[in-house]
Image (cartoon, rainbow, N blue to C red; front, side):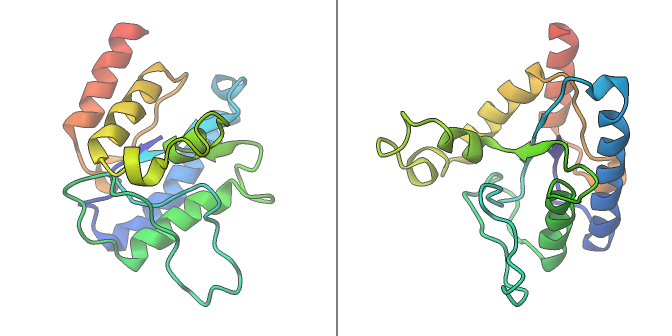
Length: 171
């Protein structure tokens, strides 16, 4: 899943998040999603998915932010946070997509024991939005299925176009 949120009008984000959940639900429950268990989330939004679900007692505090994933995405509005929360909640127990797991680069790097204690991932490696972009692109080009945001829900980008072109060559 590739979702560039940077230039999306904030009033569209709630609808866009719900639409993304519906599209994913339709794809994954079809034969196309039969062997898919994990969904890779590549985005320009600086959220840390790993351990970042909102606590019921958080009194509306913002989610935990990670390294900047885009050098041009400067302003994160509450609507961005809420849209990401809609997507994340769909993967929680009882959610529409609770049979699948949403993951990203920072979570996957933390899963490997050889990284722990040897590399401060957030500070040393993932501070560079270019690193995120390169690694995300390597993963999504090889994925079984690729989904990006609709025109009214996602920034049109050369990154997305490059992924589509590379997937056409690989597949």
